[in-house]
Length: 564
Image (tube, rainbow, N blue to C red; front, side, top):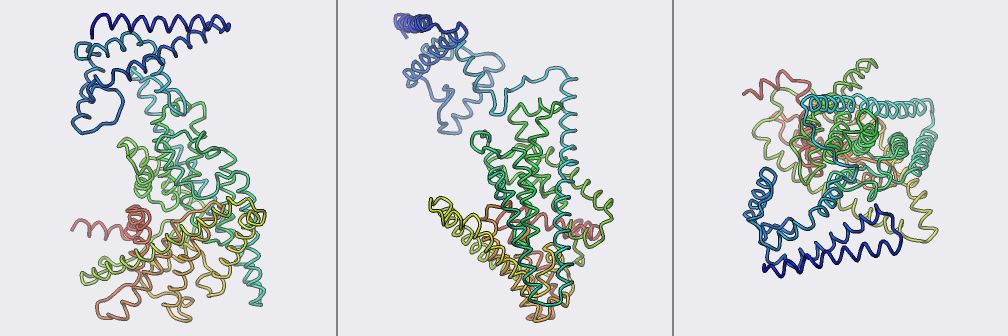
């Protein structure tokens, strides 16, 4: 670039700054704000200058802009690496770029300070002292253990409270002699807890739903205080916990896993605000890693599956997953699973409750033969079609309810807020009471029964095993879309497991009657069906959780099989 052009650009910059100073003096601006205005004017002029000369700069030398090829990306990386080690080389840059970098260096430093600050606070400098770095690592490790130690008892307490509510319902129903009075009491119980759950959810609208989709958005790096207001509030935690307990206690067809992930995320957020951990939450990337670990703890506390929780946190991030997240999520998940096991021991939980908490199974060393592989493939195809139909139903119901919520008519607002949830509660109560005793037991008990390698209990055989499995599968496939689209804390994992397990058991019983000589175990088809139905929605994580439950009981035989 000619010298005259350089001088002209410098004169324009000087003139712009002079006008800015004059303007600030005329309107009596404070000196600190005057300096900020000068910097801002320089930055604006620098941006205009960069835009005017952008065509003369090669694409790989630009700091911003779309990367068109892998070669351009590699060139940018090499230039950035050399600049960070040796400093910027002025000889390799065009003259117009040198002018911009020389004259607006201070202004660019102001912009960098603003851009490098995360949405949750300023970025702290990297510690240079080894002692400081080691103490920070110990603090991170301590935080991960605290996350599992605090979060798991909270989730376990909610699970125990749900079990107590459902047990008291069964105990009260057994005292009644008349079938009609039992049915009315069953419906009143469902309506009461549904209304209480709706009232609690009114405290914070962010408590409705599972919260997993919001976590996926937050883990991409957005500011939740702006885009998702109230998601991490203490009132949301209270509404989420109370609403989830009431929704499950009412007998609605909802799960708890997604809501547990949201609860753990809120607990993590408030732990990071404590004085001892406050410096850990100042960096955005570290905060996102802790939130991913919270997702893993939420799943580990539900199924006692640490690796399954880690896989879930990987799926929640969806777009990318940092390797440094893996160890943090695994440590917090293991600590949570250990605390869950200790709680089961301290509370003197019987074997049935322990089995329902960690999904134990007892299959033989060789639960299937090579001839059954095509049958398992056929089972997966059938469950894929069934899951597709259920997802379509979820979408239709969600769109219809959203249109009613957006309507300004009074009757539509009253219907969607109160009448619709009560109708769903009555429908769920009728569907779980009228078929028989096999639908009145707890959901974890249902899935444990379906996973048994032996015959089903007598309560499932009053009509036939096909009738019982078909009814259970239909209840969860049809009622789950109706329940998870309500304004209540919900989840989807466990209902999909039970739906897949019931369909797999139906398929296994049919195969057993069709091929009695090959030694079919219907419980293995139930396990495969649950993994397939969950895998149709959450990839490999659900399958891995159920595989862990398969090998937990027979760990010695499983080691011998895997070694072969």
